Length: 310
Image (tube, one colour):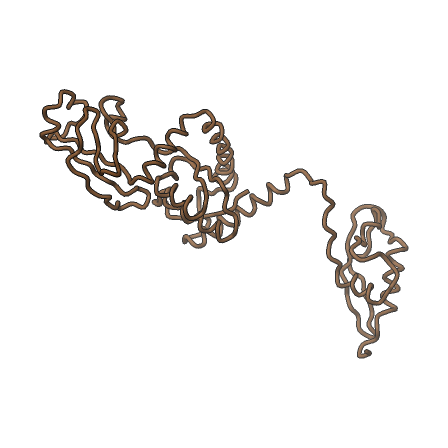
């Protein structure tokens, strides 16, 4: 079932809409305990924010280390350095300790975590026999950037879980949402807006989501529970107040007509005036009205008080 619809500009990145989704779901009491998303929605700040503010576990692949050494699988990547947050120093694979610790620096994007920068000096890096595997900068000094401790621990834990078969099996459940995306795009023409303006386009998206939900609900198998009885009509209430014999409250009056039909408009006279009542129509059968329904209408007509009487 679709529980939230957001309409944004085409240039808005997917990762920026995740906090708004959780806020709207929390307002309606529909927050999930676990939210499965693709890689475009996962970022360290949003994973931490969802767990802290909404107690929601965002479940999705976290992007790998973007450093050159990690991408090429050669040299010393950031994970090869030991980070000591208490002493605010970083130790390289060759045993050198960083000469500086700076930050955390805020970033310009809400999807990027604040950055702590540890720097090694040229005197430490230039004599190193494996310097070419570590850095290619002009001054031959390595710089290591990483998020604060809470986000770093979360990053390591999520990346470790992503390598397990249990994580892959659980994440495979998300593939079902692609059918919903395809239904919107190809079944309901969501690639093109029918109206001008983001507000009107949002109305189109919401109404389409409602239609999809109704269609899916109608396709569910019936439950074993008995359906709730329908509310009596005003005409049925009138008959009950007047104690006119007939079917009891909440029963379907037309259900006993058994493949016959009654006139869809029956005139009930009030003294000299006429009141028109719409009656149910049952398809099939002959043009005869069963005696039970006819007798009840006749009794209702006789029980109506004249106009102006109390």
